[in-house]
Amino acid sequence: MSNFVTLLVEDDAFQRDVLADVLKDEGFEMIECTTGEAAELIIASTGTELQALITDHNLAGKMSGTELAHYARSRHPHLNIVIMSGTTVQPMPVGTAFLRKPFAPERLLDMVRE
Image (cartoon, rainbow, N blue to C red; front, side, top):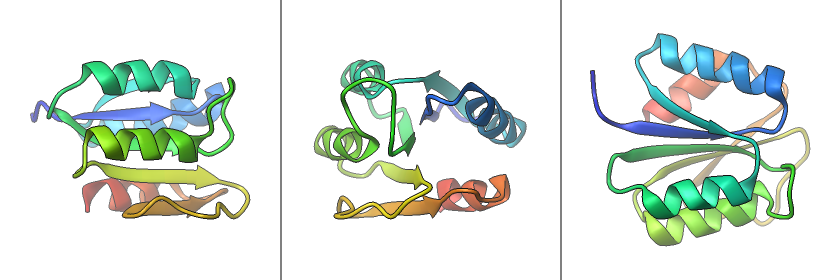
């Protein structure tokens, strides 16, 4: 079991639970939150154990998933970042993967493993 942590930011409780369960089943250690603001605090206080950020683009609160991704990239340049959205997100932060909703949870697993 690794000590790597994956941060999942999704304001839809059902989607968050489904995705978190899939990742936990694969041995990922998950931190879950609903807003970019909450995720920003976690990113600020987390060190190198943070391995991946998975965020919805449209979040509760003022911060978008894209803004969160930019912040996370500035703090953790090598972080694996996936932005999920039902619509196109432009411009995408550099080095960020995009998953269009709806998608099979296995697609997300493949992207987080990369």
